[in-house]
Picture (cartoon, one colour):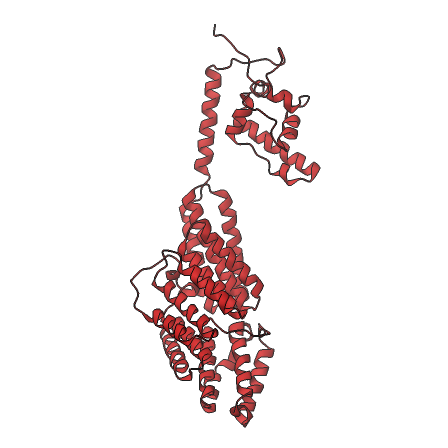
Amino acid sequence: MAQQEEPRSLLLALTLARNWTYRDAAKEYRRIGRLLGGELDDNDYRTADVAEATWRRWTWGSVRRIPNSPTPAILERMFPGHTVQQLLAPPPAAAVTLQPALNESDIAMTARDAAAHAGDAASAHLPEMTLDQIDDDVRALAVAYETTDPRAAFFDCRTLLTDVQHKLERTRRPRQKERLYLVAGMLSSLMSVAAFDLATLGAAVQFARTSAMYGETIEHGPLQAYANGVLAFLSYWSGQPTTALRNIRTAHGFSGVGDMGQVRLHAIEARAHAHLGRPREAERAIQAALEPGTGLHDDLHDVGGEFSFGPARAAMSHATTYLVLGDSERAEASAEQALTLLQAEASPDRPVQMQVTVDLARARLLRGELDGVNEALGPVFGTAAEWRTIGLVDRLARFRVQLVGSPAGKAHMGLELGEQIEDFVSLAAARPLSGRRAVIES
């Protein structure tokens, strides 16, 4: 007959007497934790869990000190009449009906536990098709952003982000988590842009930082670069071009950024220098943006839509930079180039086109061409109220200040344009920002 030895802890003896596997014990541990959490209104109890390695250490007498709360109270509720000190100590003689320390049944139980644990790990993943659909959904939101009401776009992004966050809790596979964190970062960036369009700058900054943190979590250079670019142009709008330059320097330090992302960073950098009164540095950054690329792509900027920064977006940005520098000729040339490129794209006449149209009018006003100004602004005044976002409204408000301070503003046509702008702004979804703000990004 095989020699028997007592279990090394009362906890193991009681577990064997109940014929529990680790899974059974862990399930009961969680149940008791939730029960005590409700009684004590304590989330530490509600979320309490025990890993298999920890349970084995407790049951095999390897504990040198009493575990931290909430473990003692949970164990004492699981095994009434015993203190945690008694449970972790060797069992008293004849305290329970003891099982052999190691026999065929115990080996089988351990094998079942190991198989169950492996099964849990294998089942804690998502179908690849689910992740593929999420990737498609975020791409669709990015592409549709320019033709979607910013409020509706924000809610769509929020719905998908909530779903992604729940799915992150379901999977344990590192590769799947990485994909989901990337999508979460992309959605946070889109929500930052939407918040910015609705003139909620504080929230826009917070979403951009959230996006950057998601990128840092998975060490994704393009996402971190994009998010820091967003932070840079939000700094422009807050009248902090020096801070914007710091953001851009940080963004340039991330690896894996494709040609399109590099063009975007150079364009934002040019605007920062312009606002700091550095025309040479601004021109140098614009020329860097115009340089042919190396053919490098990345999985963020090349998604398309709001994440892209093609020639039309670059020309729009350069037009505003030249306006800041007071160079009306190159501002007008860049604005006209942007409008030509936008017309050639698949979705012409989208609202973002109105922003560069205002820049075209501003360039013409610098030269006193009031007829050209009137011609340019005609389509702008027909923009629907929900599309009168901060990028457009603030441009028009600044144009009006420029108009009123010029000789053209005293002419009959100038006075009429000023009144139309007032009416336009009064019905807008966003309001002009107070203080010294700088228009920086289209």
